[in-house]
Image (cartoon, rainbow, N blue to C red):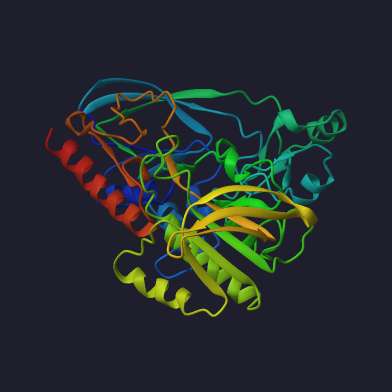
Length: 411
């Protein structure tokens, strides 16, 4: 039997669960598929409730992990095998090679000299990245990772002789004995390319809400300037399309909970950068739970923000790289056709497990959220369970950690 706990996913919920369990005296293993901890929060410009940058909350979590010897984490890792019974499981974890030294080496000069580039997953396709990269300045672990598939022949020769790089490093597997599991696999933005009527992927200057977060971030592809991807010009007319793919039987059946608040936050981004920017929000319903209603009131009070209750039918390319929207104004009973410099699709959150083969014995509902498993000592946290904001994700991480601790103590 084991008192150790496995946390699958190193986002905010997973980090919270791991820290809480470790501080109660349990060994904890974090398995994260990306090269760095932090999850989706690391991609945000600011997050609720305090509208602080992600480094604010994450660096506190990272420091707690550094200072707690009971926590071990594995990045670029996945659970590929799982066997046993409640209280006595063995998880097989496969770790992909990082190809860089196990300590912090500044590869910035070498990275910038490389020729090969690839679309940046972290920047959601808004920028390119080098084969040798570290996607954020506060990355944890503070190590670069090397993508061999992105190297040119000249690049391969350049990195081969570096004593801090190992291009021959191979994947490895290890087995972990654990008594309970916290599943905090998080969420992914809904695939906007499926929203063909809204111009996603085909119409210039039509971006998703997560892409706008990267544009607004001081560490993003534009250094924090919200500009049109096509020409780098600051937009004067911006439209937000709410429920893009959400509450739709052809896409996501449910409300993603966070999209309205994300749009309100992004209206403030735009107003701060350029008070003359005209912003229109097309919505079905506006959801600002609890104290967040004050944010809604603040945005509604902005003289340059207009709210239109009505559904957007389509977005098409228009002259000057503008985006033409056809929508309804349900209150006035009018059909609107208007051009905007930039259109932001408020796409919903989809659980990361949707459409994936999970190695754990996890029952999923029709949308991909975890719908059980507690009887086996497997507990879901954060957006693996349901759509949640950062604060509620942290709370669910604490709850899942306590359940896991009770499982291994009460076996």
